[in-house]
Image 1 (cartoon, helix red, strand yellow):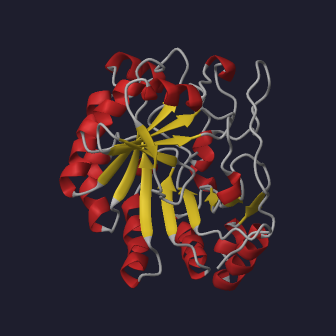
Image 2: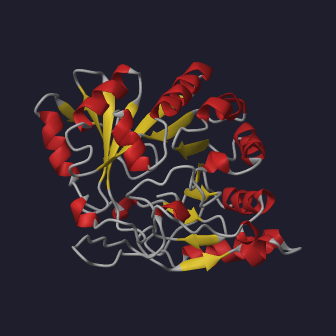
Length: 329
C-alpha cells in the first residue's frame, strides 16, 4: 500500500482523460478557453498503464474525470479495460464525474463495464440559468441522461457548486428534487483554480450558510457514510436521503486525504491546492514502463504535502494557475 509522509494511505486515484468540455461553466473556466493540443495528451493505453500500476500498489478506487470525460474519443475502451480489475477484485470501485450531457449515449455501456455509481454536476434546475452558467448547456438533455443512467441501474449523486446570487436561493429546492428522484446530493464551495472571467469573491458562498438554510426546513443528522472522497454526509430525516458538504475553503479536508490526481498529459498532482507535480509521460511510454512507473509513483507519493490553504480575496490571483478542468476538481 502507498503511504504518504504523514502515514495516510493513498488508495484513490482521480484520472482526467481530457481537459476539453462541451460546457464552459463560469466558475470552472473562461468562456474562450484554449485547450491542450491533442498531440500532448496521453493515449488511453498510456493512461491505463498508469492506472494499472497504481492498482498494483494498492489503489482501490478510480474516478474518471475531465474536462468532460465522455467527450474523449473511444473513452469506453478505457472503462472496459479498467473494469477487468473489478472482476479480479484488485479494484473495488470504478466511477465517473460528468456534466451529464452525454449520459444518454453511454449509460448502458458504463454499467456493463462495472460502473455502479456516478456523480452528475447540476448547479440549477432553471433552464435559462443553466444555459447561462454553463454558457451552452441544455438542462433537458442532462435530465434525460440522468433518467437513462437510473434506468440501467446506475446510482446517481448530484454535485452542486454553491454560487452566491446565482443558485443561492435554489439550493434547498435542488436538494428536495434530487432526493425525490432517489439521488443523494453534495454541495461544494467554489475553489480558486485558474483564471476565469469573474471575481470569485462575487461567487463564493460558504457551505456553512447553505447548511443553515437547509436546517430551517429539514432535520440533519451526521452520517457515518463515507465514499472515499472529501464529502461529509448528513442524513435528512424528512427525505431518508443524504446531503454531503465539501468545504475546501471554510474547513479543509486534508487530515484524511487519500487521493491524488492524474492529468490527461501524465502529470500527477499530489494535492489539489498545490502546484507540485510529477510527470509520468516518459515512464508510461518506456519499454520498461511497469518498473519505471512504479518507481515514479512511489517517489511522487513521498512528496505529498500535508494539505492545501485556499483563500479567495478580491483582485487576488487564484491559489493555483491551472483550471479545474485540468484535474477534474
